[in-house]
Length: 253
Image (tube, rainbow, N blue to C red; front, side, top):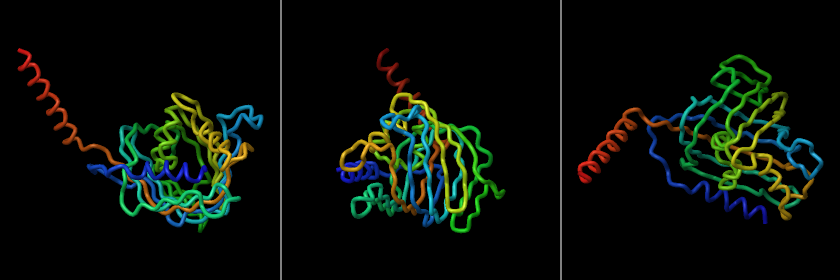
């Protein structure tokens, strides 16, 4: 069943060993963030002329999302907290429940982005207050790498996320009264992209019905923390590699 498959996948993703934190900071945190979601427009099976464009609509949204934009470069990510998602309403109970009381590793990747205005975004859906660096906003647009976005989302898809690949993702989104509409355009590179992953989930008999939509409810309380290597640690690693190379040359001589 899709419920068991994703539970195993997410469980595997969240049992990686903890990473050593050098310079770390919370990239995003959520507090009582929840509502209903509908993902559509991703499937060629429903005569969608462009499956690499799709829309995510969040409705009846409440709670808080606090987001910092990470610097471009190589980062490691960890997550903590709880995620509860029900994407097969016909089946009783949530399909995904993940509760991580401590920090667990998600992986390492390169983060790049463009088009963002601001570095600190606070979206308070309970009070309908949305700001970028303290200034009110109604939405925005940005682009970045698909694999990095999956990492920053907290690797929600677990090992299944490896199928996304490292293509590009362009996002335009609009914030409103209890709503968040997100339009995505992506290019596939080394994987199926998010649209291909959604199509796969929609086609699994126990969970999807090939209607080109995935919908349900969600509730998230937690955080994703990013880590970058300390310059001193990188220098020591470089010295160690240089020493090993010198020993190898000495033995060869």
